[in-house]
Length: 238
Image (spheres, rainbow, N blue to C red):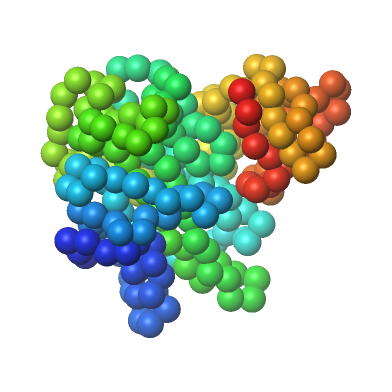
């Protein structure tokens, strides 16, 4: 466990450490404040100092093929959900590819950066931002454990619970329990089976999320036609 009072990004710090030395699997960097926290699609993850879980975990999943690296997204999301269930008694869901929502508000996000060597995953840095005690946000679609539960918790306590759940799901993945992981993820997948509006490079369309494919892409059924989309290939409109 490496604590930095502040840094640009815990992912950046841990990637640099992994490149320079043979850091052991399970190394964690966490901080009170990120100057340039990163989210998906190049977005910024903004969090007030000292109020949230901001951490990155080093994994060495050499048992996974590059094609199956998306399973790391699945288990990270599932670990966050299991953690939140210990503090919040409201509906929790996973928005593809790796955001966690309490009812209709985002409470956590995951950013995973993988390094390949040939046909093997040399290491993966799993970055997690989880809103714990923050009460004010620049956007109305965000929430925290405090806002959802009405009670403040020690950030360190929440982080330790999250690490325990992440380790548990990682060991399940390592032991080959992939069908269980997929089933759990699909059961929590936001808007699954509902007719929603999307936007792709071909324009806007109505469709129904039915699951994910063997590459981790989102499967959407639109008027009887099944389409698969990567992370930057489709946008949720409503």
